[in-house]
Length: 318
Image (cartoon, rainbow, N blue to C red):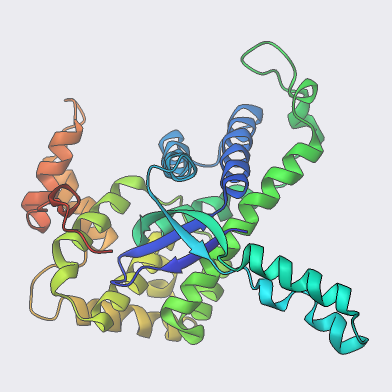
């Protein structure tokens, strides 16, 4: 069983599962992304698909044991309890129950990996966008790079299975968002998300959110951290509709504006608004010249403050 829980300092989530859970999820994401990209016109830029593969990178290292692990209670003490309520269990059966509990009382070994919230929001929106369109039989007639048709190696049943794995993951993401923000705010976000025609989430903006999170989170209150996450997912979805139709989307606009005001109340930019981020990026980006990763990192440091890279110090507390 896959599980997701918020980390103690609210930086992100801990994704956890046993080896088979994580291995299946990894294969499903890999297989379906390849099938989807090569079978028909893409609705997302290629680099957004690559960003999804960064999740698979974490999943693979997770089930390889490179990240962490946790013992998860398997409630073996409940084994047979209902049977004893419905009918009087024999002594032999009760002895079997005790043996099962003794063998499994330490729980199951789950592999774990931590993922920052801006990434989780990006994955959530991108997966949902990807899964909006169901596979068509014509997709399987397309030819793979190896020269074979998809239907010779990948069937509709395979696609249904893999989509199911990804849908389950997005369901866990939404459920965690509800735990994080509370039912009222999370459901307002979900209603807004399902009612707008939003553009594809952009990985460069997501990196800016991560940068600002790492620069500012240590000195933020818990309430400010929640405001940061609320503003983040609204911006990743895209706030254009709520700004265009403020009366119809008053609840969403009030939540969003309250979060932005709380975060930037002292005049310091602790949250990068998406439109302003691209305006600033345009000032330094010259399309006639290469724009390398180090150029982008310099831009983030100059615009939003120096990221001390807490992961490198070994003192980072999730």
